[in-house]
Image (cartoon, rainbow, N blue to C red; front, side):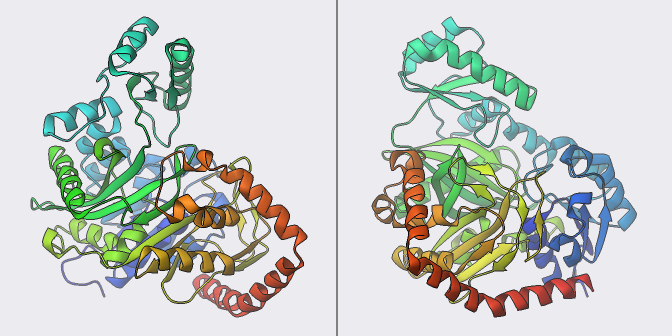
Length: 493
């Protein structure tokens, strides 16, 4: 039975682990769930977990998970009162939000105008500057003329960063260290932006020295309440995409947290925000600057939940039901430390996806370990979507314990049949600079992490103890696999 005052049915317009995560929150409130799936996801765990499931097309996302009319049509047919977009796909698509609301359904995200305001890096920078939020020195317009770019770069000083205004995921970002390489970089960035996003607009800003990526989780309701749920450090990245996240940040003091948190809340108020979102900042040598706002739930949201005990999906459900947030700012407290490792099916040497069939799967367990996954033994990871297998999160009383616990959990995690980045995470966790909290967004390059992973692979192959360890893990995993298979079978029923 649905709890009093809550919406009765939610369609999740996404797949994989995030679809299951949202459905779990719904189930605890007694809310019915609807899944949509492509032909490639006929045997996916999220499809089995939902109360209802509807096929929406062929595997390519443009023919299924990006088909707005088909998804809204299913929601209407199923009688869904709200749609949760998850992340990726249509999560930050203003047209999708508008069509949902036009159909009389609640969009579990911000208003379309807020999505649009934050969708352009140039426009969002203007909005934040007007709201009093610190922004990175640079220009607030698109640049096409190389000579103009040279003049601006000379004013703010090298190195500079070229970015696609409509970009995301680090695509179309280029660092230029001197004038000699600026014109060629500008042309290349414009071509990438046009080909990827359909918009060749490029802007230029100061590239920060020793940059750290620190973001603040925000929650907003329709009653004028906006709060932040502390920060997350997301500096460990490859190709400008996050790999390891933790909270709190090793560099954040209480005074800095208060200042950055206030700036994040100001950003939310500036666009009349609603639901969950993330305000991202770049931090460098004591100063912080607005980077962008992700108008959705983030992949790394579990670490925030682990140290605050705030269920972010449930807060989204409260907001979608017209209720006030379940917390005030003063009630948000942090307890301990949490670190997340994104487990992907990929080749660590190239960072390219490595889809395939999982022939053996055993998840770790024990104190302080959480896994958000959407796979099982025998599952075929399709080549059409993101290669994320699971998010492995470890909590500890302090950072040292969280690191040790995550390393132990990675040791226990067994995935066969596909290449994974598990060893990459173990190498990162053991790097002295990481242990000391000396993080930047170019950490992997600066410390030759890929080279060290290659060396670790050779050592494992040569070490007979590695085979004994694998056997031990397999023995531990027998029960885990049996339980996982039972759960999968139950979901079929």
